[in-house]
Length: 111
Length: 115
Image 1: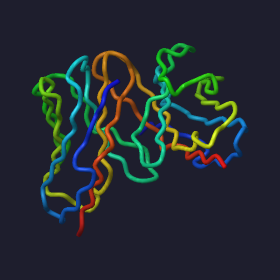
Image 2: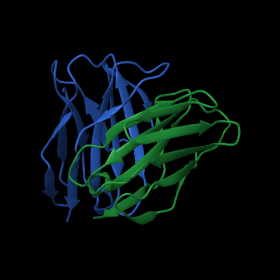
Image 3: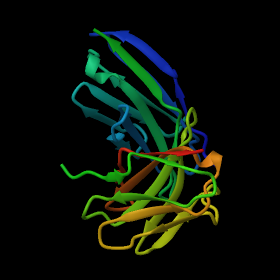
């Protein structure tokens, strides 16, 4: 059973601040790492899926990196905006289809 | 943009009753999933489904649970006799593929409350 952990659990930042959070996962039997953005009462939105050590993905002001050897991924948000407020979930996938989720990081951006 | 939809958004049921949660996956997707999140806990995998059969399931998915694709568009999760501990947010997801780099796209969830 995979154990995926995210830190911090919650984060309050001011508009314009850049921020980052961490997802750690077992590096054995690793296949892919997924990031989702989840606003209350909406569907979790797929942000990135990464598979290779050293992968970096970017979407607008949000980017992510992957280190499969040490078992962690970072999500970065540059110049946070109030609309970035959401819970950010990571999930690790082994060779099967099952995603194992972390507990999420709840980001609140104050105007 | 195509999306996964789920109905109802909230279901209240009494302990021991059967419930059916409904999902309409993205139309060209072939692989379907159910996950759940008990309040305050992590999102947990329940089951994946392909070609009209279960391809993978977790320990949570016991004999009380079943899944079905009754027609070309719906994908359902049935809980035969609900327990208090089945109260959770249930998410449906779908994907085009299951190998290589692919996304699982999630619906907004059905909140199930068992009283």
